Image 1 (cartoon, helix red, strand yellow):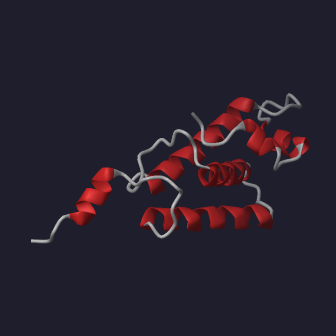
Image 2 (cartoon, one colour):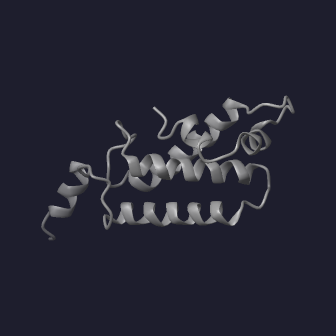
Length: 127
């Protein structure tokens, strides 16, 4: 299950921008397969950061992960066009990565139990 939905992206991007970022065949409509790829790439990035601390893939998806996935997917759409993303998109991407770093370090919780293996490893006495 993807971490964010097409609707999560559509609420943040005007239809003409979404079409411009995904319509490789110049059909005049958004290409949902391209959007699905951008979401899958965002999910993989999230799993790479969070997988050391949490069981991934997330199901159900925590709200903070859904937000991060949408921000990264949108940034990915701009990046695939070699277009300089608007500052708000750059900022949202940077903030998403900072949040993922904090989640990976355990300084921010997503409201879910960490991997028991991670906890057990941290609880082992040192020799």
